[in-house]
Length: 249
Image 1: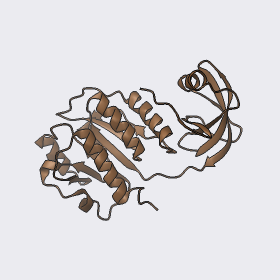
Image 2 (image 1 turned 30 degrees about the vertical axis):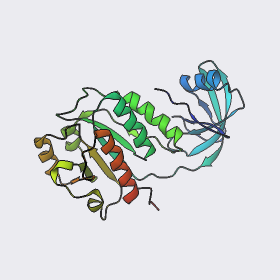
Image 3 (image 1 turned 60 degrees about the horizontal axis):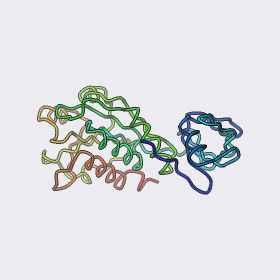
């Protein structure tokens, strides 16, 4: 999967791992160089915008380009780096297309960490986290974010929970008689995390283990049973609307 960089009158918007400062020479990835040169027919002196999740967004230009090699020259900062409220998504592994879609939409919704997990009813046996990270980078380019979510390696749910810490973890538990999400969020602010289980839900032993943990709160998203990917995005949208950066000041 490859999404074209976001493009405006000031040029394509691209993520880089390199430090950004006035006059800095920044290497392009081979994919970026190929797309700019062969697809968009851009050349030296053409405008781009760069961001790295640390130094804000920078107006830049193509310094040199040839086949799959290019360098950019950072000119001036156009937006300073701004903090993002921490919002983690913990998601039971699902099939590739659904996982890809969730990674893209979660990035658009401001998620800062994506943690795939394996549960007893997980359908997928592996997760291509490098692919998810690439999708997240492309989504961040498109949606004007200044940072890209961290995508962690997939792990068993119990292992993630055992090393969790204290961040409140809200769990989609439609069949557990849980309170509505808006009630569970009363008085809470980020950092927060949202956990969605597999198709068919958590096994009883998994749910019991979750509910024994002090940082876990079960919540409901309404009267309907949602698919994993639907619950992931619906919950994130509700979190951002009720206590995230849709209302952040």
